[in-house]
Image (cartoon, rainbow, N blue to C red; front, side):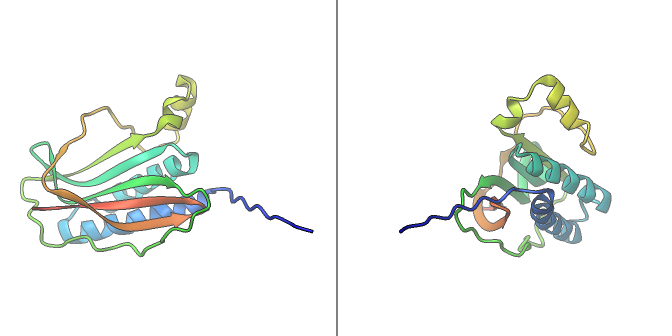
Length: 169
């Protein structure tokens, strides 16, 4: 006699909120050190991220400072992962570097959606985008000044976010 067991876990809005809250905590730390983003901007970015995660439309999203069209420290990039049943770390947020030179720089964010999003009809896409707190416009991805260092992992409900931080040379 043999038996098998299969477990599937649905990714819910609660899981999306858990992941987005980790990102919001990172942004709050960035605000504490550098003055931006504002509380209302963090709330809007968190709401946007929840919707992209909940619907499975996120490839990656980057938040940080840019100067002269180039990302500088501090900058955090989050890449969505489907864990396919694998265990994955759920780190505490934090470790945003203080004391970086952001003079002449401004806070910026850049979202890259995935193929699932691209495959929606125009009507589906418009309906989804009407749920978001703000609209994004197309723009080229800024260059980077330094190198990316994978430093945190967040997970919930079978999905994860890999976080990478920009480090100066």
